[in-house]
Length: 354
Image (cartoon, rainbow, N blue to C red; front, side, top):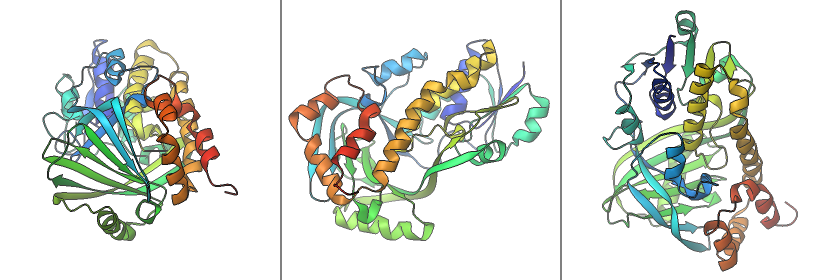
């Protein structure tokens, strides 16, 4: 069986690893010269994202993955224009992304034996003629728009930087403020006690707008750290009609599995890549296997629609409610699936008349 995977990111490498466990080795085509994102940053995986798994590391173990986090998250500070709430507990983990030795991408790459062809801009139209199956794991929606119907849910400009300073390595900071993030957000994730990544996700923003929003963010939140590196990119989340077209499979962000409310993609990338491998090996229907993922995304589409017209006073109200000890305990100290009910919750707290 000949299988080609386009993209050596988390989705592509996860799929290759899953196939290798069945004794199938594939050819992986990567357009960059090496493994990992061009820019480094800290990615978080929260316990509320993997419920009913109480520990996100147990979620990875379900797929036979052993991934080393940089640190456990024991404190999250969330800020709106006039309020701040602090949450403590065993909240999740920080993982390194990028080209570093300990990045998730390189941790996965070290576990596979399939050959990776670097500096190759592979075309699925060509590969599908010479391979039994082609898996598209490019991390973007370009192929999906060509292969099937694409419905955009949200788009954003992203600007980030690497900061030097003194950081508490178990604490993550999140900001909501329409003056610089619109209906998006910003977050700081420590990579060590001396280095952190800072990222602004500004929704529905033009390329020429992002720098002004970035400067507004830094000024308004008094972030005066030394910045040694900056990066910019764009992000789009959408739903697609078909996730398998002939002998071509779409996984991870390339398959429209990027969660549209907060842009989390790690969990769904791993899930869909393993489901894809299982479908190829056992002949199951891929669309059926990803049904549970799609149900979760549909809920997040509802949430994104509610967030899009939130006002700053709604964010303030949200934080006041989250800061209530009973609500805080329900969300963070139980295994209640809060993400499933978030669209309804946000609708309730929004200002009457919206």
